[in-house]
Image (cartoon, rainbow, N blue to C red; front, side, top):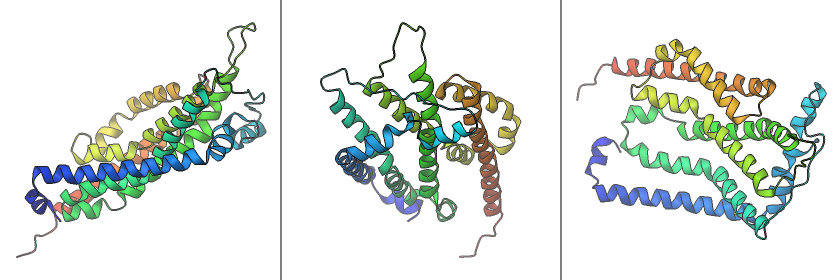
Length: 269
């Protein structure tokens, strides 16, 4: 189905189609949320509390190079009557969104794809895979690198020896969930740049010209999402700069293919 066929569908028809895509996405999130709620032992004991342990893989690797972290793991406390239950609900929702993300992207693509021309759909093949892959890669990057570094810094930081840290359940899980979701979104940078290139907002030449400015912005982002130490910021800045360079390559390749398609001879009808 191309744009001409899509034009035949009424506005209400488009809304009805969109509604069902949204409904299916929400159902997928709820199903994944219920699964995460049921397997709370695995979610909480194995996944969420692992980054604060000295036995976590990141902590062990860093310790081998002389940068041990979380060597004094803290105990989480719940200070509210419904604290553990609300944390259970919140984490189940976050887990449901992350697990169902590829299906949500697929539903968005299913709604958009029929409105594209044949050559546009052909070029965008694999979009669902790459969007999902980059998001999951970003989540894993945040979980395995930024979260343990953040937990180490924030959990051990003291303004006075007279003040003891008692880390609450909700505050800990907010750090874990916000960092992983943020890095998942940040890793969509190549897709975002590809979209801006497609609509003519940016060009590869523009991105290359302002590479230094992009580097400053990436440093600021790294400073915001990491503990305030140079080592952590460098660990985050390197892959983000790699993503930016990859965005330039993707942008250049897309423009090249667009020009090739424009120069193709038109077949006689």
